[in-house]
Amino acid sequence: MERTVSARLVFKTTPNTKVAMAIAAARNPGYSSFEENLSITVGGAQVPVSEVPDHHGGRLHYMEFAEPSEVVVDYSATVAGKAQPEEAELADRIRYVRPSRYAESDRLLPTAYAEFDGASGGELLHAVRNWVNGELRYISGSSRGTDGAVETLLSRRGVCRDFAHLAIALLRSKDIPARLAAVYAPGLSPMDFHAVAEAYVEGGWHVIDPTGLAPRESMLRITAGRDSADTAFLSTVGGSLSLSQMQVTAVVNGSLPVEDPARLVALG
Image (tube, rainbow, N blue to C red; front, side, top):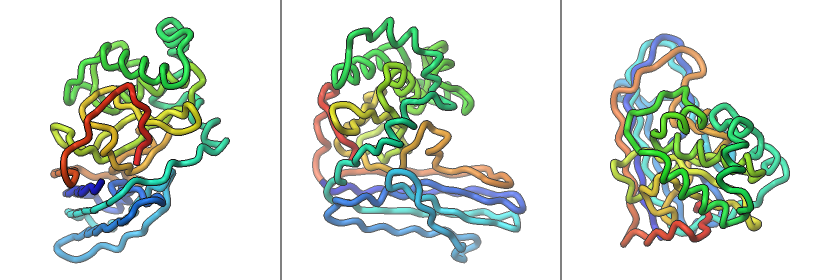
């Protein structure tokens, strides 16, 4: 499978702003080819940028702007093949079963045991995916950046990150290591960066998308972490910025895979 993805961002910074950006596809082993291009300019001039390794093959691109600047970012990549399945290190299996900022699994423990008592492995993944999909309504712009899984469950609505946070929290409540993955998702409509959940069951990491908005087989990892606090596509570590333009594309060469929500799929 060959996937072609792109992202264009335009944002304005205040003086002395430091920016961390996560929009590049993860460079994990196994792909048969991986070609990419990144251009970051201010007034047509290239901006110095540092590439910083992140979790699970992800990469952060770090920039500093002493003066107020209008920054134009263009990224594109063509990736063929599938990444090798990632081994689950013990540290990850510990880290991703703990509660986190947006996935408050400790507070959802009674809900998880009431709804999924007796389920395990792939059966549990499918049950959680279907339950979250059925309980929540996908409404663009319906959630706040501070909302976690508990708030999402109470409001019964959200966007992809909210669906993923709730699934992650429920799985962790059942002692299943689970994390959030930011991805490019061919077939997604409207097109955007997408958030899904990954869980460690039956000896490997498997992806579930409670929104059901795109086939998992064609998704391309950007990065992964405890929740969206670890996976934001654009953030400041000093100063501030305002995003004025964002365009994302993701397509496959040929037909999109047929999605079977019950099948275990590794993110590649």
